[in-house]
Length: 97
Image 1 (cartoon, rainbow, N blue to C red):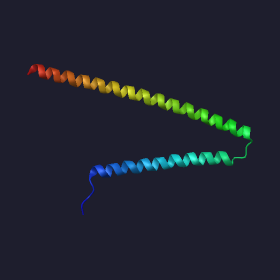
Image 2 (cartoon, rainbow, N blue to C red):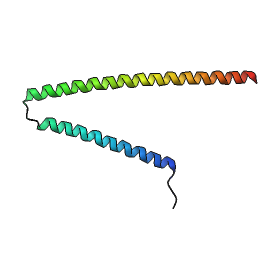
Image 3 (tube, rainbow, N blue to C red):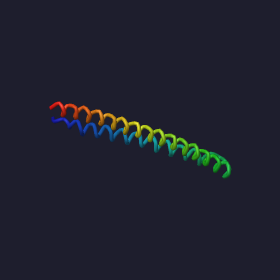
Image 4 (cartoon, helix red, strand yellow):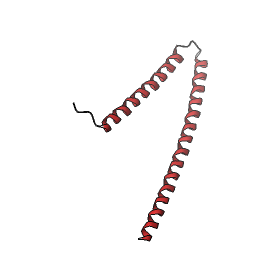
């Protein structure tokens, strides 16, 4: 029996992880919304709680976006430095020829 190519196995493993994590996140969101909806609170209390939760989520997302942006900038700078070093080395080798 012929085995599947490594690339296919790798893609399937990544896809499985994506689906699994998506399911966990969806379950957390559905569970949170359900808990909010079945909790006996007045409309004003519910709105205040929902607004506070959204405010906190917004702050967390802004922090994550800021962190991701900083990491991306660092990675671009590292790649630029590496490319510059590689080009310098190649130029030196070409000059010696």
